[in-house]
Length: 115
Length: 112
Image (cartoon, rainbow over all chains, first blue to last red; front, side):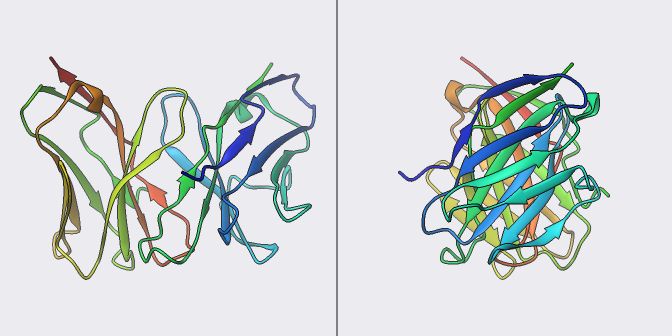
């Protein structure tokens, strides 16, 4: 079964450092998303991406965050200067508009720990 | 912005019995409602969905019910199995390609 792949599975970084989280969405999907889950809290929407541009972003997704689809297969989330409160699980997801149910397929996540 | 709420943070049920998970929403523009299951250190996994034009959808042991007038949906799992022990998230979206808005989750423990 097709899956969304995320790397790294765990990254530890110092506050103020740049971090890039990588995702390979399902190949025939058109919509791409990043979500995060702070430990013990709900899964929060960050950004959605369609047709090579951001289609929607949340208040969390400020100027420190950016997304890119550099080569038609990868989808990256960059955090320019990490803060302690950026520590969370980051989930990439993708979807098509073929199912009629708006099912997002999620990756296993990248755990980011900011020290 | 609590557009999707799951008021029960946890649920404990005996193996073989029914698990009923509830979810409420406030945004009448939502068209699709989905349930996801999540194990620790894994991403959410899609379980079952329902569109706003239906009031019931069934897939094996899982049935989702939608009450649009009450802005309420529920997930029934019957019979419950120990492998069903996980966190279950209700989610909703406005249209295909739109973001999902998640509830806070309900942790289900199925006791053997």
